[in-house]
Image (cartoon, rainbow, N blue to C red):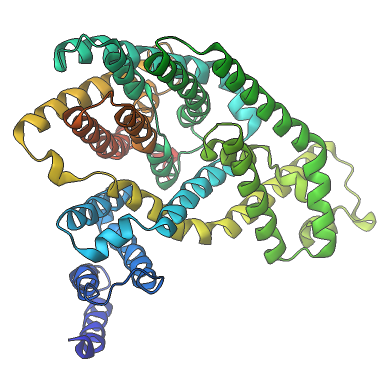
Length: 476
């Protein structure tokens, strides 16, 4: 069988070349051989690093196959989530290869690294001034996006969906519905080329505040469940750490980081040094955020946000050096401002270009891994689907309302939908509730359905809104 693969691949490549407008045969071919080849590895799979080579190749091939959805103008992230769910189903039926992938700490680490790099790239593309400009709106969206779903979860869902009078259960339901994971929304914003739209910037600002509020709520709820009351010392310690982290970030960005970058660039200013600097700052800030109790992705976003293009002042392109040379001294202030602006854009695009090869591989692995956390076989019965659907409707409505007080100049629907997905943050809340014995198997399965449906709903709805409600010139 394997001996015939080169012949079959050659044939399908010829068919594709003859019909350039339709690459469907090649995609179908890749889809048809990916999982059989992985199944073929079933007998050879062993608990060592060898299987990871084929496993990671399969994940990368799967992310490539997800591009197939672009034929229907759907976001590729949707395909990556569904592929992850398919691997989860295979693992449920004890396919050893799928089980090895799901329980591999290396795959988990690469997925976490993918989420970190995604938010770091978004931070690089965002401007601190732009986020500060929508800071009030972002704070309002984050607060409403927490309060409304929390109330709906703690009272409506707890009392009417699960008929619960248990205070701990109701509080945990509210906290889980209040959580937000904007990684999926950010990915779609980037694919559509609207990441700098004011509505998208509000979602980014709100996501930072939302994660901080989520940690505070989780700390309070866990304290109530474990000790019957709020642990004031833990809450004060968390708030202190958050303020200290933001203060250190701003102070280092003002003084130390530009100096450190220039010292490295004096050694070498080639692409390898720039890539190493980017990864150093990204990973250090992610580690620092984890150390004080924040999510690593928040540290990565803050790192990208404070990393300004002018920090790389030693690496000036030849066209800029020629224009500002003594022989071509520019005296017009407006022209100088324009040159500096063009230089900043050049530096920003160069940094993003250096980072993109890592993201093209690792970010899809993150979304496939997120899909692996949803075992469809556990939730495929009518009762659980109805309960999960009810929970999902409440979860979606709760976040859609968070943009109601925004000005009319901002696309409120885009903001609301962007805050809908629960993703890995919702899973973390749910897992915490299960570990504490608050959630039984039925409630946990219903939350899994909610996480899956909100993750599928968001890219589809954002795609529709971007085409129907935004000017066509804003789309990439």
